[in-house]
Length: 391
Image 1 (cartoon, rainbow, N blue to C red):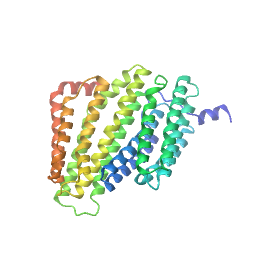
Image 2: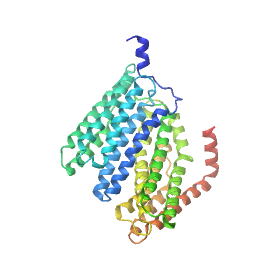
Image 3: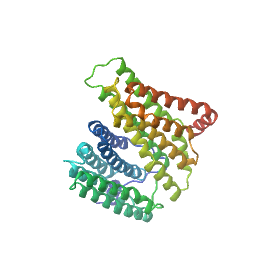
Image 4: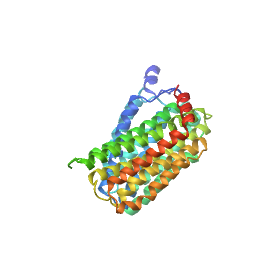
């Protein structure tokens, strides 16, 4: 093979100004199927056991997606052999997504093998990309060790009983998530704008999944006034969640990431603010999707406990993720978002006697009251930040 051919097939580094490519969005469409499957699992098993399984699966899938967000912030996914490796990873990911409803049962081994395929394709591509960068290669080697241990535990757990299986999954997640804290923090490199944009887009995709859940919940039922109000309320909640992140928070966080010193500081912010703290936001959206799906199916009846916790706890968890996100980025505490999160959680006991539709109305009122307060309270600062950061 000629040098020129090898160059065309090998990974191509991205520059700091790179933005998200179409292939990355194409990859994310497979991930959103996995999100839909997690919501379907929760809907089919609205119990605490089903909730625990769904959260473990969600954390596992999120870490898979995070790995590719880091990867495609280093290499161009549409150049050379990386494009075909991404297609192969998508194939493995869709198999894992299809296995989600039975990931702890009959399809546990198939899920584990497909998951391993996605993870090891990621490590292999990172290894190729690090061939001329000793620091990055050292970091990739450390990541490969924690990944191998985590994947091996997930594969081994597929042969165990459900209770033990969950405990082994939890151990695998601790090792996998803890790996970046223990090795090679200086070696990673990212394109800040691309990395922040990628996480913003996956939040939009997740919000889209919550809207899809409304449509799924409406299948096979008669659409009356209650269902119409529930659907409109669902859109109002999704719109509020979008506003709370994208109006200012996302802009400030991207600027903070870009202004950080390359290396340990920037990588630490990227890891904590995005890889870790976006997970509760994603889980919050998925839980909200479940709550909205169950609401539109039973608008006039009280929700069962787990769907009720999802409907109110989802937005609360999303807001708590924002509180931690803001603290990590600018070391400021968002009291108003913490208060609204606390109010949402405090309302959970009301769901035993109150129909689902009024609960949706209360959530809409609280979220948009929060938006109105922040828009008024920080009007001058918000206007300056939005114009400074967008132009």
